[in-house]
Amino acid sequence: MKCVLRVVATFVSVVLVAQTSVTKYVVLAPKSTIEMATVSEGFGKYCPNVVVTENASKADYVLEAWKSQGLWHLALLNKDGDLLMATHFSHSLNDHFKSACKKINAKAGQLNF
Image 1: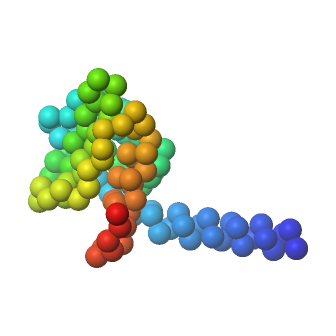
Image 2: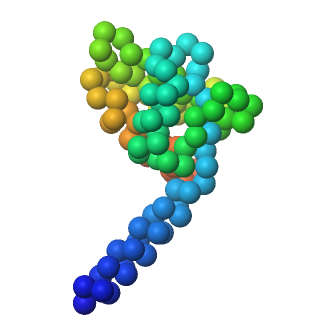
């Protein structure tokens, strides 16, 4: 029984990874105040299929990222400059990356708030 459960858990993990395995590229907006390494680390932790690039023509998304007075804020835009999501200023950058990853990896046409 334990073996069957382990096989099922492994299968579910593989399916979940496969669903988000499409590589998405994000470029950091010039007016961002957060370093590229910090952004790359955040995406690497919560959605490893997202690559931070300096090549704007390759990017699927633009990320504006600010830190002001110890508070973090992210705004995610599509490559046409349309705002897809924005976070409220908070002390937790991790929650912001989770929200951005959810939006980036949402199926096309799916609304998620």
